[in-house]
Image (cartoon, rainbow, N blue to C red; front, side, top):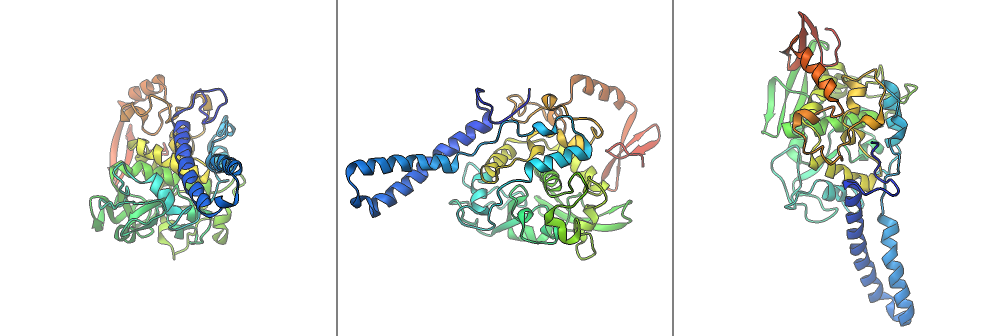
Length: 401
């Protein structure tokens, strides 16, 4: 079944129902503000009948302002695509979105955080720190926090463009934790640990392919998949198009900034092909994507961001798509009707091993993998899992080492 968020005549799905409730809430809130302000300022100028008509129009106005919908067939164009074509097609779908003004105040980043990252107790869910602070009102800044670019802004040169403002990779963060993380890529540090708070580890790793040590940061296990899917989104939304041309946000450096002035990007990214990431980083991201499946918190956050930006993160909605671009389904055409959607009623109830990474696998796929598993052995090398089969080493992408 193809999952569209707005299909005429269908029963609304969880995301649609949630947006409807949010629209009703915004309607009531805006009605109250506008009507009270109007009555106190201008109502004495009109007769009773005119007052009623204006009140009715004020009731309708929020419906037009805030009724956000996702078009039917949002992902239809990816059907039958694979690899670079799939990634480029997803780019055309998600790249056209509303850029939210950066900072605090109404209609800005911190208002998005209020709806996206505020827990049921009113605290800001900080993925970099356990020191959560209250988020008291839409647009207000949580005490001691700032806006963190999980996909470091210096990687495209730091220009305050669409990527700089994109809330799918922006997170509220403890200021000190943000500073410790710097512009390092995701990874599991093994030495020179300079920060280990229980929520964030910062240190160095050595990778054979790069022949040097470099800094990385590692979040809590429960957020590793969240960060990986944010990276997949950014590499797709602001990566190269089908012709290999860099996005406008990267035009200054004709791609990601890989000079020595930005070490984080130099070790994590590449400009050679559609994959965007260095092979070692792909291994880390895919592994974390599989180990930490999409959660209710992540779905809630995507719905909130979507209400402002009017686009989606496809790697949250269809986690298997990451496998078709960077993982074990490279070279295979996407069959959209066969993909498992995280809004399916049974998805969140599945055990982690059945929904991690590629929940669209069939029972036959799983049986085949189980049969093959007896010939494989996992080896940990430099913090990265390597597969050994009959004495030959492979990375998690299936490439022989």
